[in-house]
Image 1 (cartoon, rainbow, N blue to C red):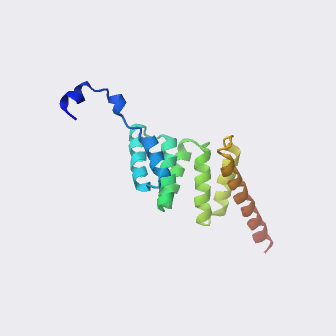
Image 2 (cartoon, rainbow, N blue to C red):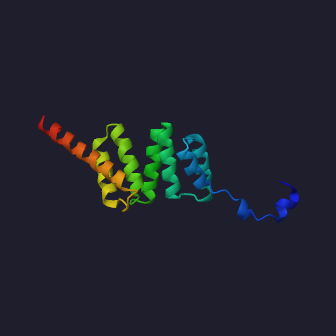
Length: 143
């Protein structure tokens, strides 16, 4: 871009929405690129829990589950009612065998879950996982 364009351009028109870019890249399966975009979005809005949750999701997709859990915990430290963070953390905890803590986060998610058709599959998934945990706990308690 020439110096004249830089001097007289409207910077707002050229600003990149890094959060939206990250979402698009995440949907396209370009996880490392999405992570870069989300990190840039976080620079623009430090501590933004929506951005942090997307970073945690991206870490999970890449296989960086420890980083994902750490990021979800960071979100919950800022906003204990962040339903998505409870949901994501619960399933990471289940994968690592931490059933009691996973159960607490599943319950928290179900208490805080948003309404609407978009949330319904996640609510059902959480209910099923919680029911399985309770069944395992009952069997373990009997044995």
